[in-house]
Image (tube, rainbow, N blue to C red):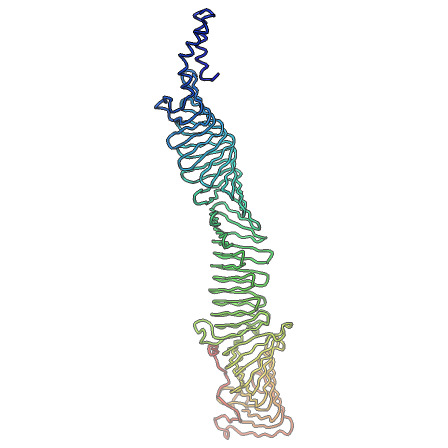
Amino acid sequence: MPFAILPFYLITITLFNSFSIPRQQSRSFLLVIACALLPFVFMAQAPVANIQQDSTQKLKIETALVVEYFIKGERTVQKLSGNVRMRQENTLVYCDTAILDQDNATLKGSVVIEQADSVKVFADSALYNTDTKISHLFGNVVLVNGVQELFTNRLRYDLGNKIATYHTGATMTNGQSQLTSTHGYNYVNDKEIFFKGDVLGTDPDFTMRTDTMAFNTETQTVRFLAPTLISQQKSRIYTEGGFYDIENDFAEFDLNPQYEKEGQRGRARKMRYFGVSKEYVLEGDAYIDDPAKGQQTQADVIRYNTDTEKTSLRGNAHFLDSTRDIRGESIYVDSRNKAYQITGRGRVVDPPNIIEADSLDFNDVLGAGLALGSVIWIDTASDFTILAHRMDYNKKSEFLNAFGGMGIIGARGRPLMKSLIERDTLYMSADTLTSYKPDTLSDTRLLLAHQDVRIFKSDLQAACDSLSFSSADSIFRFYKIRDIPIIWSDTSQFSGDTIRMLLKNKKLDRIWLIQNTLVVNSEDGLLFNQIKGRNTTAFFRDDEVREMLVEGNAQAIYYALDDKRAYIGLNETQCSEMRLYFGNNQVESIKFYTEPTGSFSPMKKTGSNTKKLDGFFGNSCEGPGASADLY
């Protein structure tokens, strides 16, 4: 018997019993009553459109196979069954069965709540309040909003404000990616979803874990609101704040961001990740450590590409690997090709060498480098420094070539070499300075100076056309091209077609003069003692000449002094060989060998002008003077 007919049937039985109608007449009476009630029964099973609905009813019934009414206290309850469809404004409600009790609706079986903007909610059952427009959905609940689908077993959905919440766990997916959490707040109008509690996101390219995060369904952007770990195939990213644009595979992490990739670790105040180009950008106290490669990188901004292994450092840049320590304003490192470039003032420590310049380029594969602008090269092994405007060098052959001068002199100037010798600095300049190792298996280094070479030390100066120095024997070799080389030491001047100067324990030990040699000495700069020969060797002790050997056609002009250091006459001597002994920068004694000849002339006969041997030139033994002349 249909549920809607039952109350009327009970009324009929009650009336029959109260009137005590004879049994033989009961069937006729029941027939009359049934005919009278027949229109009400048919009305309950007729199309809903034919039913008179309450004009105040908020949930309008559009279709149902069966509509039944029953009394509950002082109110009437409706029960709709079969293909039920109801509407409240722009919201459609579908289900198998609905019980309407004033503002509350109980929905069961294949529940669907659909809003005009394509938001749909599916559930096994639901409780819906037509006044607050809030529904509680149970069972296999699915909320569909565009490409986003949210799966849970219990959902509260505020249709008026379009806010869905859950607290028993849910999974959201867009086809490729999915995200699960214990709690969720979906603000449909704002296109924002907040997830909290054991949040786990999975994607073909990454996995993400956090406690709290937000997701914008329109922009496909994730915002990190708590410590978050993003894991990829070979890398991990940690952050406590920031966002990730899923569609464009772009992320920005701005609160304690860190990353790790195959042992490489990085951190900064802010970190950006470009998934398309596989590039990380670290900003503010940026740091990357790669123990496997023995590399450390620091700068204000670091840009690193994982595919190309190229790194760009800007601001207070510092790059350290197993072979070198690089500092500069900006550094560009190509780890794969082992090349780097420094712009702005930079410094490279590549033992045993240190180099500074305004810009530096180097390629380890080729072993070639170029330094420009106020270049400073320090060779700690050979203990010398070269200052220049430009320097070309090769690490494999340890070759370098220096041109131009430092600072404002720049390319118009000349390179300068300096070396500390017994607490005194020796300076050397030329148009070009070249240094290299003739044998890479040896520590021996050669230094070559070309064109207009000048040397300055507080007690030693020299000038020549070209020069070489070997660290193997610590000998300077001075060569003549147009002008003969000259050395000034204290009050003496040494010249010859070729000169060799030996440093022993960083002290001047001896000087060899070869071919057409001349030694000039003066007490007052007015009269000059002169010693000439084919070859001459001068021996030094404590940077003073103590002995001199003249070989081959030896000649000497020497002005003798009395005990009061006054000139008394001129000695002139010739022989095949002579040896002179000095003390306090003056001749103490002379030995002559092989048929010496000589004469002595009083000062009255010599006059006030210096007598000159062939080859004597100039009128000073003080050398070029200030170190500024080196340029």
